[in-house]
Image (cartoon, rainbow, N blue to C red):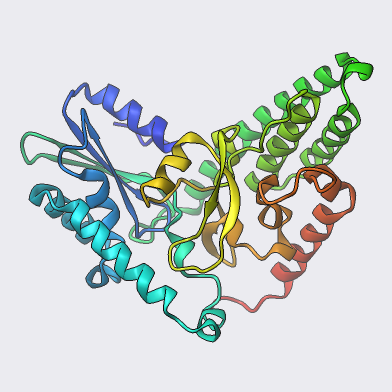
Length: 344
């Protein structure tokens, strides 16, 4: 079986198809090395989702490696008490963090609860019947493994190249839509043109996945402006999920702050069941973090949630880019990178 990259849901579907099994349990781990996600076919009869998620909250596994975490997940799946453990551990974590004094919360920085918002990376497949396990490493960023720098570069380059092509194609399509729009019947035509211009500027200056995702968000903003009934932005957690289906109030586990964000169907379902949505992860200070944990002054995308945190009237992504916020955030990021102390 070859190593697979891309959307975790696609990965799971491809693995199931290749293995050609009707009864299957799939466990994946994220790029951060701590959190597991479980999927089971045909139903979640063994509480696989909750069992895999619960592992990341267990104190005794804080410093454990991948093998120990997977072993615990398998233990919970066999015992059939994954949901019970998951609910108990998340309630404990939420109670402990919510009870912290605000001063302590500020001192601890932003590395707390929303670290649960993670993406998938490595793969473990278990047959529902029998004890045979097949383990595939997927993420070269997992701290339990060492990979040559060339592997990092190859994966990032492949992801970026594909997204750049997609962003360019969507920008072209928006340009054609703007060109053929009836100005008299399209009140938002000028906003759509502003979004097109902003997306074009960002695409030219894009230096990695976060900026290319920003192009997608700007294109979506332009298309929304052309629509007589403007929609909501792309999914807050990862705009690559597509147009959001609703807005919802979100509070990261262990945090007091709440935000009104746009979510796709899958992320909305994850929030309703107190699970971790799949998020766009970026590199910051040598760490892989959810994009929204990058300080706002260094990322227009973190400051705006790719449009999800904006009012949507005069405050738009295109307006922010036009006002120079994208360029200023880029400059701040470069200054920080050039002057931050070397890693110990």
